[in-house]
Each structure stands twice: as C-alpha cells, then as structure tokens.
Image (cartoon, rainbow, N blue to C red):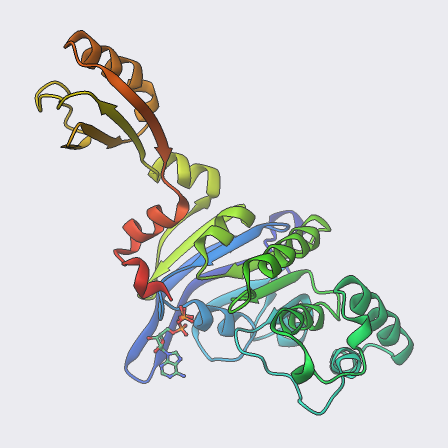
Length: 313
Ligand code: ATP
C-alpha cells in the first residue's frame, strides 16, 4: 500500500484491452481524485464500459488499475469493496422483491443481517422506494428501476460509485431528480464516475471531464479549464444592411456574413466585441440586435470526437 497522501480514488496506468485482435483500449492512463465527480464521455464503442469493466474486475487487461492504492487484480476483494457499480443494463433478479434485492446484495458483501436491514431501510427511504419494497423490480417504473440500481450500488457504503448511463431512457423531470441525488451522494464524500450520452448531464454535474475516443483518451481536465481552453464564443450581430466582408478580418475568427446577419466565432470574442461594434457603427451601418453565445460542452465534445450529434444515441 502507498502513502495515503499520494493515493487517488482510481489510478489507471497503461491500460490496454484486446478482444481477440481488436484493441478496445489503447494504453490509457489517468487518475481520479478522491471526492471527484468524474465525467467519462465518448461516442458509442469508445471504450467506456470496457474501462469500467476492467476497474471492477469483469474483464482481463494489460496494465495497472488501483482503487485507493489497492491493485484491482492482486487485491480484488478490497478493490471491489471500495466500488459500487450501477451498470448500463438492468440486471435484477426478477423473483426478488425490491427490499431483498438490497439486503441480498449486502449479504454478498459480507454485511451482517442486522446492519443489512438497517442499511436497506435507509436506502429505501432515501431513494423513495419504501412503498415499493414488497414489489419485484419488474413492477417498478423506469425511474424507480434506475433509483434501485443506484441504491443497490450503495448498499455496502462504497467510496467510489460508478454510474454507467444512469439516466438512460427516463424523462427529463426524473432525470433532474436523479441529478439531485447524485449531487447529494457526491457532496457526502463519495467519488463518482459517470458515463452518459447526455453531455448536458455531464456538464451540469461533473467537476472533471475525460473524453475517450476509439480506445484513447483525447482530453482530460477540470471542466472549467476544458471549457475555458476549448469552447468558442459566437457574436451575432443583426444590421440594417450587409456588412462588407473586409470590415472585420482576423485570422483566428470564423465569420459567416449573410442577409444582414454576421456571426463571428472564436476564442473569447467578448474581448473583441466592443471593437467590432465600433467598426460596424463607424462604417455607417445601423445595429439592430446583438447576441453572444458560449459554446456548450456538447459542441466542444462533438468537435473533439469528430462525431455528428445523431451518432451519439
Ligand atoms: P457505448 O457508449 O455504446 O456503451 P462504450 O464506450 O461503452 O460504448 P465499449 O462497450 O467499451 O464502448 O466497447 C468498446 C469496443 O470494444 C467496441 O468496439 C465494442 O464493439 C468492443 N467490445 C466490447 N465488448 C466486447 C466483447 N465482449 N467482445 C468483442 N468486442 C467487444
């Protein structure tokens, strides 16, 4: 075991995974700090689930994975106890009640009956599932099933919670309720790793963003830094007549100039906005409307991965 001061919640070094000849993960390395809310995003087939399955010991791999200093292979048991997983697909035992689904899982982790019952009660209440405790998971609504998946992942009080597409297929309002729950769990100190195709969700919740594409990490960093470094701004100005093309020329700006609307896109356009407006007014052109838009994480993500929106889902 390493010194606790240098310990990360997750530390992945040179992780490579081959399915026969196909290399799904190509030598990836990254660290996740304790208490982080880590967004792991990438297009379909990028390697997110393979990475998660490697962390929890479901697939064999080359390289090294540690959870709080414990090696995921050599110290499998200790690692597994540190991690709660809510997988992408529902995998409930269809014959168990909601209550048993939680208490049996506690049993798998060696939690004594009395403690298991207490913990189950607490989670049923917290996740608003108590009134459904005697139903089977298949009798729950989509949102309730998703909540049960997360409650089950938390039964053994893991320090790391992995949520693989936790809001897939549920409506906007239920998704927002789950966001609040996730934030609460993270605020209580649990490190969360979230994969989601809803980039808006990752933008709203995560502190760190990691983008994976075709088995390689292509961007990783604090969300604020990624947005500062990579997101563009667009200044849109509506005028009473067409602005001459040569009025605003700058090599770092993308300009579209059509039908009395000019759109100028670049880094920190805000800083140049006053100059641009003055130039237009000095040319005797009347400004009717001004709008400034910041690119969202989704647009940055699409640019980074070269994907079209429709391919994400
Ligand atoms: P999604 O967003 O669609 O869930 P993902 O990023 O989780 O995608 P993975 O499920 O990790 O992607 O898959 C990564 C690559 O590995 C894909 O090309 C996939 O087809 C391949 N793959 C995954 N599991 C297996 C397997 N058991 N056998 C062979 N290839 C696999």
